[in-house]
Structures are given as structure tokens and as C-alpha cells.
Length: 375
Ligand code: COA
Image (cartoon, rainbow, N blue to C red; front, top):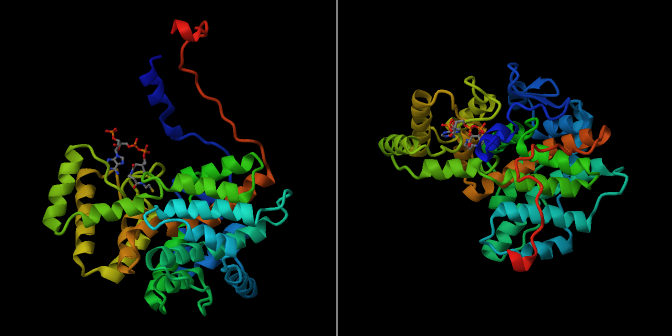
């Protein structure tokens, strides 16, 4: 077999069942479900904290459990002085995904997990509480030289993040849209970043290392970075006509249209799309940006029906309508997906075997070593 034939055969592990999990189903024909609850019910009926609790403890919380969980997450918003010093040293032109990854790695050094992982649930709550503070502290310091505090009346991650980003009381509809987006992004089976987290956890590494590794995988535009890339695509057109012309040109050149296509969803599309599109429409339905987005979606439906929009396409415009800077779209994904990653880390640890697949060797036959002076 030639190298190019072999490369094609490997095919990004498409369709390969790489392990078992009780957390999530997607692409099996019964929709997207977290522990059996449909994404539609969760997005329409729950808050993000209920979903994070579900992912962490495999059951929905009752009222008292939810209040207690929210209190604990809120109590974990503070940054310690060493972490603040690290964040202040990171310049403003750094991509915020590298900033977030550095912060999580630094937390591992500063507040590491116990060797026997007996504090893993506390560390998950720490990560849920601190990640919005990390981004907002760095944002205000790097851009305006201002150090923010972490006091807030907001009881949820959605409200707290929006308040600390703009340093003003967030709009109620923005908070609700953010809950929906965080719920949609929370979990998605063996996607690239979750699988990365599981591989790292399978070596018995600590939770901060596993999450930092996952952030690295999420950053790329074929995965989490697609929401940022989709925004750049949409914003590159100032009218519907321009968008149609531009997208047609891209398709002719076989360029990737960011925010479209998905490894596990076929023609039926990504069930998260309709839910976040509804919010995008509510927040900015009259704007040219929304009209351009819909025009791109319609054109793709006509020209590439097998590539429906994924969750990232309308997440981009929804975040934009909330006034969130584009480069923070993927860091928000971290604030949510950390709940899914940690659910998988716990599940992996509960029945662990190191993840170490084999490769099909396509290199040269064994050969004689040549001395350096003979090469
Ligand atoms: N725009 C244009 N063409 C696309 C496309 C897109 N967004 N996604 C896939 N295609 C094309 C591929 O070029 C390929 O064409 P070919 O058969 O002529 O070579 C074909 O559709 C099959 O795609 P493939 O790359 O094999 O699918 P995959 O399962 O490996 O990749 C994604 C899945 C998600 C990585 C891919 O669809 C993509 O890159 N999408 C854009 C990035 C994105 O939105 N990512 C977020 C996912 S939630």
C-alpha cells in the first residue's frame, strides 16, 4: 500500500468506536442526549448549572442540591495572587485560548489535585468557578491595565461572566441566551477535545493536565475554534448579495465554510443548531449580520445539503449580538465544555485502562544504520 493510500485509510478514526461511555449519545438517530435527557429539554427547561451538575454527578439536582452547587461554584471565583501575576504577564495580543490553557496548567501547579484524585469533584467545581474570572481578569488587565474584583450578585456562570466582561449588570435575555449556549456546548461524546482529555486522564495524570490538553485540542478551527472562524466568515460580507457571491466562490475553490459540516451528524444536521439559531434571531434578527448568516445557510442548503450548519454557526452571531468580542467565543466554549471533559475524566478514571492504540506501519523496511560521514 502506498503512503497516500494508507493515509486515506486512517481517515481521522471516522466511525471507529474508541471506547464506551454512559454520558452522551449523538448521531445515533435519537438526537443529542446527556445521560438520556434530550438537548431540547435541557436547553429549554434547565440552567447551565443543572446541566453541569448532571454531568458531574450523573443525576439532575433537586432544588437544595442545585442551590448548594451554585453557592460552591460562586465561592470558587477568586484568583489567587500567583495566578493573577501569571495572567498579568501574558500580553494582550496572545490568543485567549493560549491564555486559558496557560491558566489551567498554572492552576495545576498552584492548586494541584491529590495523587489519589479524592478531591476531583472539588477541582471540577474550582474550574467551573474560576474560568470566567480568568478570562475577565486578563481581559481588563491586558486591555485597560485595570484589575477587577470577583464580587458579584450574579448566582450563575452565565450572569457572572457577562457582568465581569462588561462590568455592568447584564441584560436578562443575554443571560438566558448564554445559559442556552453553555448547555449546548457542555458535552458531545468522543469529540477531539474530550477524547484528548480521556487519553490524558487514562495515563493517571491530574485533572488540570487533562483539561489543559483538551483546551489545546479545542482551539483549532476544525473543532471549537470554528465559532470564531464562522464569525470571520460572516463578517467578511456586508450584504446578502456579497455573501452569496463570496460563498459560491469559496465552494468553487473547495474552501471550507466554517460552521458547516460535522463528523457524526448526517443530513439531519446538528440538533443544537435550531436552538441557538432561535437565540441569534431573537437578539439580532433585524440586523444585516443575521440576514447574511441566513443567506449563507440557505445557499449551503441548496449547494451542499449534506453539510448543514453545526452549533458553531449561529453561536457566533448570538455571541456577537451580546457584544462579546470574537476572540472570546472559543474560551466561552471552554467554560461550558469543561463540565463534559470532567465527566469523561471521572468516567475514564472509574474504569481505567491506558488509551494506547496501535498504528499501521507504513514506513521503510528495517535497514542498516549509516555512519554520519557516509550520509
Ligand atoms: N465546507 C466545505 N466543504 C466541506 C466542509 C465545509 N465546512 N466540511 C466538509 N466539507 C467537504 C470536505 O472538503 C470533503 O470534500 P471531498 O470529499 O471533496 O474531499 C467532504 O465534505 C467530507 O468532509 P470531511 O473533511 O471528510 O469530513 P470530516 O468528518 O473529516 O470533517 C469537520 C468534519 C467538522 C471537521 C468538517 O466538516 C469541517 O472542517 N467543517 C468546518 C469546521 C467546523 O465548522 N467545525 C466545527 C465542527 S462542530
